[in-house]
Length: 365
Image 1 (cartoon, rainbow, N blue to C red):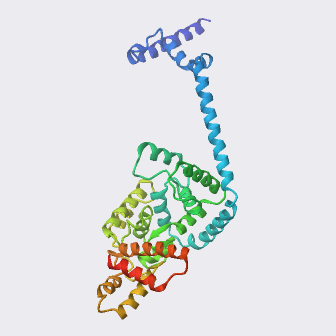
Image 2 (cartoon, rainbow, N blue to C red):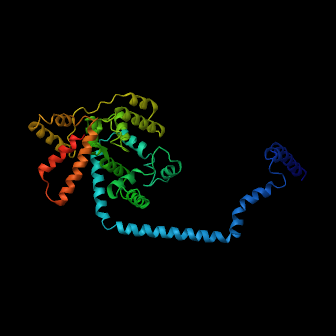
Image 3 (cartoon, one colour):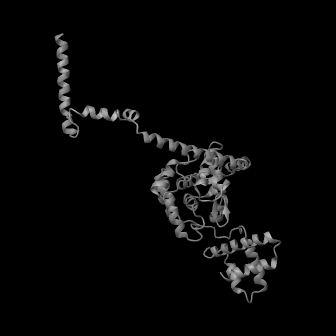
């Protein structure tokens, strides 16, 4: 019994020594020895206190929020019901297209291109479920220049099914369809369909055509610097085209490489080598996408018959693939297409009026 009392006394002495080492009066001056227990007890019992002493107005507020949320869900249900009748057929086409794109594209697509696109457009692509709450919060709260809130899946849904309207309702429908698409096809199918459907500038859609247009090679032969250049063009392909301004394209290429390093897709040494790499762009003329062939053929015909009075027209069209003046050519094409569509609604197109309209536009360039 005496030994037991000695053990208790020894423990008490040790506890007193330990208590002296951590003295609440010294380390926590705002909490006294007499009320520190009640302070922590108050913190842990605050929730139970609130549950038993609720403000009557809080029930009204919660009920109002619940009613609004219910109406929002009901409206989304109605919207989805309206959109669904013609949706399955278009959905199946997208799935078939993505599977074909995966077999043809992903077998030869370099990993640097996939990493560059993911790092620049949607760095959390392989972790989110179609909609990225972190990206939405970053775009709404911080208004950062490091990217918007739309994921790659949402962009694919927008260019495949929806109009380019900047409305809150379209954004909600886009999110719903993106969630459904993520549960239907795989991530690689979504990425391959995205690379094959987006616009790359100068009338070109698809990564394969873009690779041949800008670098004159197959995508399997693209280097790291070339992949970064193509990925940098996605947000604004016409503005960031290296054919328009090579220095501007080089700036955005460096941004893509910096993103890849920051997110762990690339090391600093390889990024520095890629930045210093001299890119050789395709020097030959592309295969006249869209209506540029009409402009070129008409210019040759017109110059052969009227070389004396219309030499300026021939010299202008002769430089149709000079990338400093190509923007004017595409403005002509857009005006010509809109005019031709208006004539189609009225009747057949008169070839003489068509050529005179084109000549009138080009003379004012």
